[in-house]
Image 1: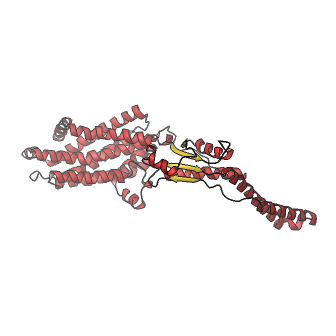
Image 2: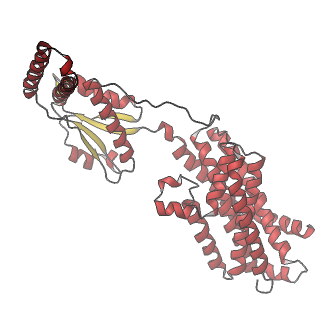
Image 3: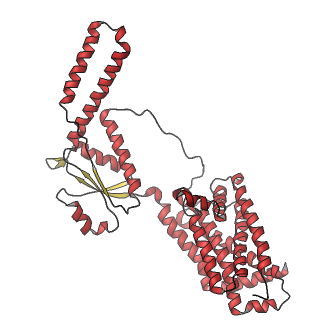
Length: 418
């Protein structure tokens, strides 16, 4: 253990003298934490700019229904409405306005929107009434006297005649969006929801299904709290794989490994010393990210004893991968490239930064074969849901992963070849 501790202290001092090492171990993860948390952490407050061009005006003012529809859109708190004058040519405006350099979202309300909406709602109401009278006649005619039945038939005839005098054209809104606008599908869904609610109100229908309920978790957490475990897991993984691999590459390039080979130091102490250093750095990185997240974003997802233990197991597992790469690949540049080729795809394919449900099905399958997926899912179960039982899978997979790769690291680490 003294030898392991000596290797650990030597590696830690060497790392502290490396500005690049400090940057990629701490500053780079912290920068990404701030960037991602700023972008995604305010997802619940996002408002999309929607330009509205309303041609349905009377005496220079929007009609009641057209303005009511715009008010309904604004009441969702999802849209920030901006109005376009009716004399604006939309296609020219999109090309010339700097606001549309990346995407455009324009809703055009045509002339006659209110008139068509009122007429169509009356027509629908009449259809409902006619269907009701017909059903009533079919089901209860045998219980009615002739006079009452004749009145129902006459009422049907009158309604059918009145219906033929009503225009039945729909009030067709025009929604213009950019094909490259990633927010367009979500925006369109919200607009369709408002359209349906608006239509139901016009024809006088009532809700027959309601949604109730509250989130199951009891903690008062922000969006950034749910991302924090993924950030911690991802950067512990990259530091473990790339950090250990880089350390061996630098020592080999400087000739320091050859000097170590001339000492009685066993290779097992060298491997364990590197793993211990990365585990300590993992705890330091976790502490810094949590403290900064608490100061800047007010996060409340703090690790308990089980999460701390899982962080240790994860750091050991991924550092052992770096030790294997450093032992197998002798070329310095090739070893660095291999570490990056493993770490960065795993970071983005494992679902650490976003739910895997957002990815194609085949990538979801790939994610479930990556150890990082179980690492960050285990941390979320512990830090967010206080559910140690559901983190057992992460402990088992990462534990087995660590044991296997440490054994392989012992095997492939050869002093003479280093």
